[in-house]
Length: 387
Image 1 (spheres, rainbow, N blue to C red):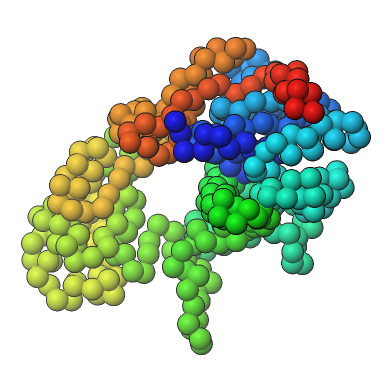
Image 2 (spheres, rainbow, N blue to C red):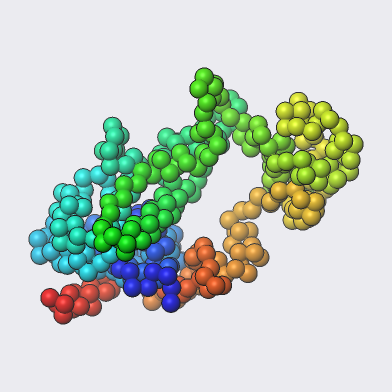
């Protein structure tokens, strides 16, 4: 039995953050009911990648990965009867997840006050770009714009160059997981007190947290406007270095004296380990050009994998810079069953990412995403039985 067996979640989410939050709870065993609109389909149902480039509302690879382990019911929430049916589902549920712009749920008559009136201990998690309050709360935002607003893109820039997009969906994925933590805490609070909770999560604030130590500021301290690409003022040397082969690279990051001594051993420069002028990050920064030239000389004669093995054997944090196809073939991820094949009734076999944790070595089952509205009749029949 998975930890959240017996917990029911109503997923009003769309695109990425809300659906991935709900999918993560489903991975933990929750019964997740995805509320879908028959007239306004989720963006990811309407975009690829599609198998064999054949489009269809049930064929999107992203949607099917994000909505695994769920049920699907179609409601037109502007219709009074269907909105009441949605409320009946909430009445029999524990958690509601939504990531609309602030005010949308209220317009639909499904805001927290309304839901709490019909289910006093309901937990509602609202994920939005800028939070439910504040001067920007009414604005919309997606992953790339939040990358930029939060400062993450500035960290990806090189001196004299504009901020660079990160790619991927860092704000959405991170926000989904932070929301899961809050929901789990709210469930524990409810079990102890009988009280529900309203969770207001700002994806901008989550994105800013990804800056980590760079947000720490002391009074009067100047914060530099420009950063330095792959390098770091406290981890020296840190950079990507060219390896043997076509477009092959490895990232090396020296974080302390043991890893610096390990790097000196690997490079065959034991005298550097005993050089007091190189014993601190500040000292190594002053001689960084010579250090990096020696590292590049060493890495250019080895494959990224061989360099990785040698560096790790000497306690040096390092990792090859993989392409997406290489990541899909990564031995460690495969050994942990991170990539799984599911059999979808319309798409056929699809490889998707699995849960990111194990309970006593077990990560739970992974069922394919539902077809559009496939569970509508069964769920409505269950509602009629209860009523």
